[in-house]
Amino acid sequence: MMLTPLQRIGRVGVFFGRLLMQCGPALLRPRAVVHQIFNAGARSLIIIMLCGLFVGMVLGLQGFDLLQRFGSEDALGVAAALGLLKELGPVVTALLFAGRAGTSLTSEIGLMRATDQLTAMEIMAVDPLRHVVAPRFLGGLIAMPLLVAIFNLVGLFGAQLIGVQLMGVDPGAFWSQMQAAVELDDVAEGIVKSLCFGVACSLIAVFEGYNSEPTAAGVGLATTRTVVISSVLTLLIDYMLTAAFLGR
Amino acid sequence: MKPQRSLEVGTGLFVLLGFAALFFLTTQLPGSGLQFRADGGYRVTAKFDNIGDLKAGSPVSMAGVRIGRVEAVAFDPSDYRAVVTLRIDPQYDRIPDDSDASVQTQGLLGGKYIGIGPGGSDAFLKDGGQIEFTQSAIVLESLVNKFFANFASKGSEGAADGAAAGSGSEEGK
Image (cartoon, rainbow over all chains, first blue to last red; front, side, top):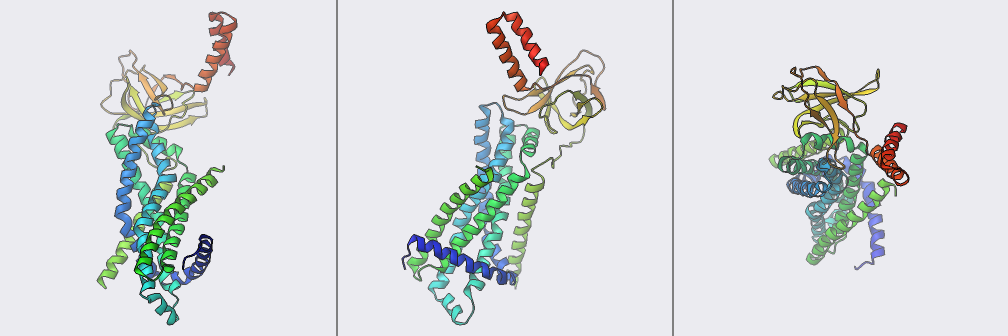
């Protein structure tokens, strides 16, 4: 069942529509959604925090080196905060999410498909879209903005650790310039991005799993495809959203 | 039922942590949420004609060493000047009361800070005191204007006239 790319895009669209119809009923059973928030969110917490810390620390180091050439190290807080809030936080979290949570969603649903569990549900007149796919989609969707917020916070701490503690940027200037320059729009931009990435990454993950070939090789292929498509789509959406937000 | 409960607690913790982070990012980052209200030290005020983009939290330094922070920036409508409250660390209690304060810039694009130059008086600044002698922020644009006016007039006339024209153009601004 090799699909042409165009056909595939169409199928994702139809699948997304059908999935949205089942999201309401799925929310009526919050226990399943909570379970999936745990799987997608809480289990990704350690890797997100670790990566956030190191991204923030690198940002502090590189930002300091760059800004020092202009003699304006004090702007490090602004540079780190805007960089994290608007770009690095949502994008890096989405890439990590695709690798950590997206793959497990795809392989789980793909294996259900391969072992005929989904078919069995359909025979019993239980909609697998409502009971299996929708809670996973919603879990990923809800977990993503929260993960991004945690990533940003830890990243900011990392940048502060390097900039202020190690490089000796004045802490007052670091925080006060950051607060003066960052506006609510910048924070909102990050939140909107994280929501969009949450939809895209979760949708791709469940779609690939649901439509994987019911063989061992098929599930493996679908998992690989999840990572590749999610990553490319994340960066593509990121560019479009940035262009829209900047109004150019 | 045990694993189910730990799962729910874990999810609850995660969601709580996420919303706490979101809350911090939306409320504390923009605007002046975090206040640098360290205890100790004493407060003096100074009035400036123009403080540039000086903000609460900016450093106050003397001879290049940080001795305190700007605690608050306010506007005095009676004489149209900015009132800056400085909090000086307690160990620096021997600053002459005729010292001067100036708004200075860190680096080319850096933020503003207040530099204090010592005076010669035997009396020292106390809590609630005021620094009388102040110098405003140097606005880069007016400096550039002055330079170009100076430069242009230097080409046609003498150097002395150029300096006069330069200072004249600043008054015109």
